[in-house]
Picture 1: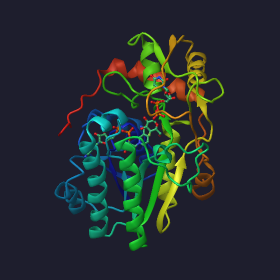
Picture 2: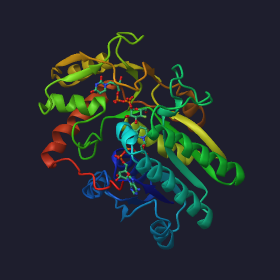
Picture 3: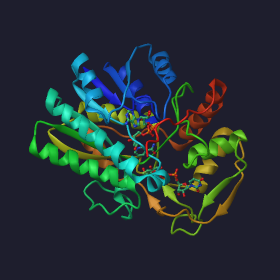
Picture 4: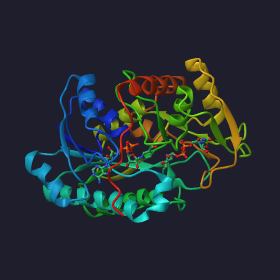
Length: 343
Ligand code: NAD
Ligand code: UFG
């Protein structure tokens, strides 16, 4: 079966390509490399011993996307390609709305034109807004605080409406919680540009000595120790969740949380990292970060019930593999460079 993976050389996409190849799928990747490197393709091949097909192209372009459909019989699409930096989306809303929404519409249109019935979409727990955790799929969604989150909520609505109008279209809307970690080989992982926004890559760069200390954003939240609680999920579990979603698609649009169901505070994660890797992480308490919520974790029971999937890797494995990638990756080279900034 041929699966088109957009954004397949990015962080979550590359791990999912590994899982798909290992599960016996043929993988065709479309990525414009705005936040990834072509070298990742070789790493995926190295890990799996299998070849994927790569197209460097823009998935907001009907014309470019149709090239793939003219070359391959596509059986399903996993759509990862998108821009994901929350702060940047506030500064450049048009770039985010255009990239994330137009790409989804271009791909949905190609599905109709070429009769593709299977579609898996990367959504985010951010669509729950300020609801009270644990987040359950049928909760009423609250407005998100940034354009990035709005693009995810809008794409969910667009795909749901299309699936209502054309019931043969089977869509899984996957709401990811906080993906961290890396493939245990250290060959692929998350390599953000510049100073990381997210906690785990920040911690690994402090461990490396690249950054002096972690700033913990707020210790006065109503949580176990006052610091923000999140549902960290190993990226390999997340990747396996995509294979499960693809294997269990059913007609209509269906939402699934992909999380562990466990909340971990910032200080607990720091402690787990120190214990897993034997490295001290210096930190200071800083002011709350605007837009952050106190607690975000999943009710992960629907994915278990309907997809037969649960996350199996614990926080220690997440910290160990994240650090292993940071060490290995730096040996291989420097960060990627963003090339797409249109507006
Ligand atoms: P990433 O930036 O590592 O990967 C995205 C990939 O898409 C990159 O390789 C980039 O080059 C490519 N891309 C972007 N726009 C494109 C376009 N117009 N045409 C072709 N390729 C394009 O991000 P990721 O962390 O792997 O995230 C993948 C998806 O999951 C995104 O849609 C993101 O919004 C979503 N998501 C991520 C997180 C997270 O914390 N990482 C959480 C929730 C949801
Ligand atoms: N944090 C710090 N210091 C840092 C970075 C983060 O204390 O230097 C804290 C945050 O305040 C938060 C927790 O660590 O309490 C996690 O923050 P991240 O930035 O790693 O992740 P977020 O939960 O804020 O956001 C992530 C993605 C979003 C996605 C969301 C839900 O960045 O795109 O998870 O899936 F929408």
